Image 1 (spheres, rainbow, N blue to C red):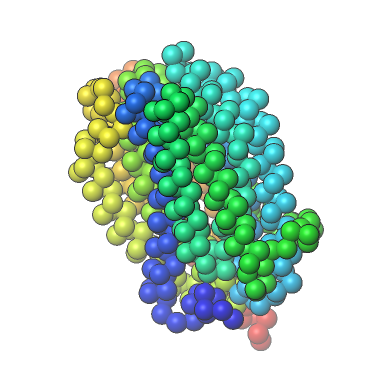
Image 2: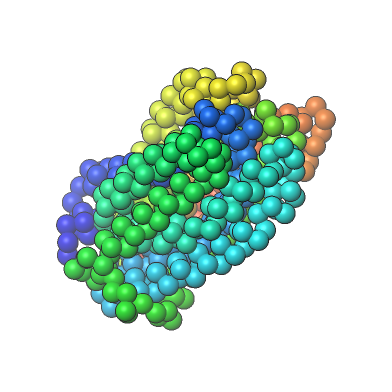
Length: 455
């Protein structure tokens, strides 16, 4: 058993969770810097319309990508269970099934994204002066989406094996390349949003190559041998069983966000610019919170595989406590520094900055609620129960937001940005409470089942 596995299955949980999670936070922040660098560069050199164009693609891109990203969650959980129960054959088959799944996912996404980006942007009500730039950005982004799929699947396997430092190193390299290419393509070649999209694609290709190479150099059950790649049916079915609900949940989250983006578009391009910049700032808070979701998935996955349910319970409560502290701290800081941060993205509109502050107040300050919801979701997935959090999230987040948009938000006096954004914290707290109840029930059932097998 290597040190990473031992730290998950033995030793002080709080310390090991922090050591494991911090590299995930830093990695996620760097990954988010890809898009942030895009927005900052086009904001500084191309203006607020280009910022709106890049920002308008976010919810639609996530809608298409999140479904397949969910499958990488299934691969990670399957590897974690195999490592926890010391079934090396299961781990080997999962690793060699995951990469072909990533490649197929990337090809499908490229075809769909390139073919339908412009019509879908039009259906979202993207303004005519923004739509052409948004379509160009999306088409270039989806041309290289296979790199993103490979990186996410391979990184999920590394994290399930306890290695959170390697993805951080590789993404650091890719992030520097992304920033440099952004500046070169926009300032020297005047490529506008096409330049930042191309820079992102190239940098994602670098990170994909590096993380694949890391798996090939391993000496344990997670070692990747390209010639052995194939679809192993039992592992593929488990990846789909756990990952498909996660993917559906992510896509439905994105559908509600697409509807919200359509509502945002109705307020005009200046509001869109402020909203896009604020959403990007919030992203730095969100990925810091979501890191504890990933930690919960893998720590609980390995300990559930090893039947160590006391450590499962402790891991859950430690992650809930940490995500609350981090969320309150970062959310408050982001709001307090909001105008300064927004001015980095937006240089030509004080009105857009004011709109961005409205979003930060309603979403960023209570963001810890989203973190609590994500940790309980991760805990359930770590236990292998992926359908339950999907069902709860569909009703609690997607259903409530859609209902909100088509009922309360349609009332003239409530057709305001404040009312639109209020749907976020309300949906988070309702969903968290439901997920927590489900988690207690599932954990108790698995503990009873384990005890009955012993006796």
